[in-house]
Amino acid sequence: MAALSHILRAKRRFAKLVLDAKTTEDDFALVIACNTRFTGKGMRVAPHASMNDGKIDVVAVRRASRWQIFRLLSKIYDGSHVSLPCVAYHQVQSFSIEPASRDLLNLDGDLKAGTPVSANVMRGALRNLRTTNDLHERQADHTCSAEP
Image (cartoon, rainbow, N blue to C red; front, side, top):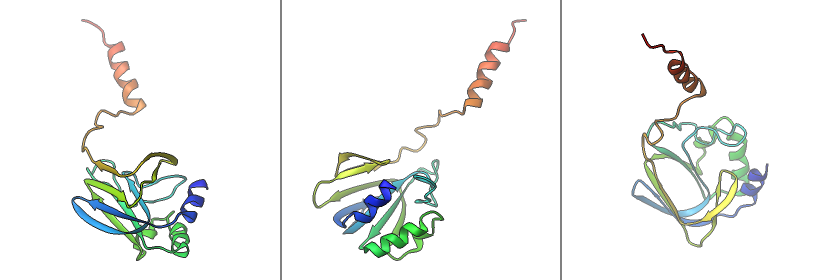
């Protein structure tokens, strides 16, 4: 709820948004970068996101009034907000955002380091992730093997 309250109270900010070397300068109400479909409590912010496609999904909300933001929030749980005229949805390998004035970033619900910020996707960088079941199976294979 705190995040929703913050979004509704936020003012638009003029910023330069660079997506895969293509620059847009505009008034943004919100810019969210995700590599998963869901954030928060079931909000489908980036409905086309995939963790293994080598891309990050950037949802940019431009020149939106508070009423448009409220409407966007009512559609965010099913992902249909991306069809609104004020929403631009991009899948990119790199992005940067540089507001006209420095500001704090909201990183996973916490206000953290300031802007500007840039990010590049490193495809395959997390390939060693395993489930708990995989680890238990590997341990069982090693502990149950017997020498002939």
